[in-house]
Length: 219
Image (cartoon, rainbow, N blue to C red; front, side):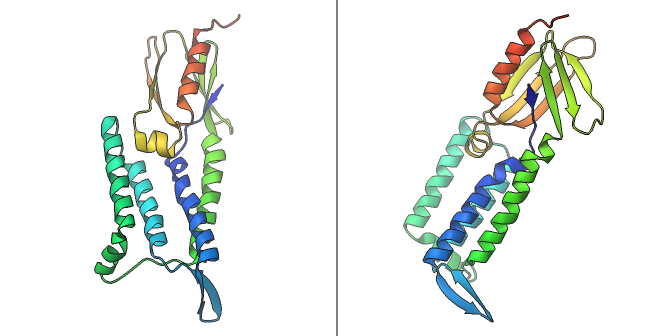
């Protein structure tokens, strides 16, 4: 069984998903405007730009600041409720108008190219770079492996303790869709604490590892 530790870019998928949606809305609900020799499609509502930048801000905040436990649920509910109410009463438009009389308008190309580049990088990192090194779990043994053979280190699983941390509602459940951080404590003369962050489907992974640890390796 292999365990992959992902980078924080794993949680950036909502940005490019929303970007593609905004590009679609700009194309089919926006107005065609001529700028120089080019024609672009821009939606007449600045709410699209506000939502897009709001999602980017939330993802940056979530990936750099961890709020765990019940407090994370309270914070996210308060934030979402405030955001929805401001949109419902059209106060975002007024606020952006008060702030130096500037509103956020992006054309279809801006949304589309940003999303294409980000989604491509996301796929390369999540399905490529993050898989260069991994943890291999076998009955009686845990090994750090690398695809390019840069060295490996093995641990005996006897007496090994396993913990999962999945209490950040923002990062682990909303953006990570069941991801979490794994903590492994080895036993023996040289005890170590191994941190494996951003593991997808960490609950099922921990359960499977516990079964493997319990098995006695064949001679």
